[in-house]
Length: 260
Image (cartoon, rainbow, N blue to C red; front, side, top):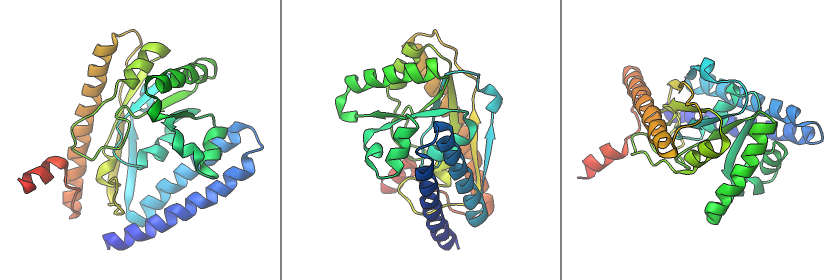
């Protein structure tokens, strides 16, 4: 049943994506707010499909911790789920993303229309400087909310944290609050897996870290807050999967123990 539901959801998810991409192309000649509306409807409908087909609900707490104006929202990155689901909590989001995504037909064009910030990872520090300049404009002049995944790529549930310095650089340069975000989405939508598990994906938006901290101290605080909250949410998620009789993904530590 888990495999069948996962298969049905994946088919429905990509058909839904195709539908909203067509809608996005229609709005390309309109102001950006219409395209943001399409993105929000895509995210909301995808969450609905996951709830109806797989039985996976979503609970987001702490929205009251998001301050007005330009902010950095630094989120744990475990799966593809948070890349679209977090759109629902933004007013005017901007993502820092790998440049290659903007090369995709239709999808990449929409990203450029929404003025997302592409980064050439091979450019090193120069890419970070360019992203910082763009982010200053989007957050300062336009009051947008910057979403960044501090680890840079998806990490399996239970993997040791690998936070990059980029988020600390942006925090120091932009002078805006940083909102940490913890989640357990990787239990229900694992990376590099076709399976989707029933249960409750929990997202916790933590109190904002105000600007002005030393970058090194900020880096340590951000990691500690996200990781401690994520560990708690993952424990809750594993307990729920056990009650449902659904096997949870094997963590890297568990895999190492088995192989040892």
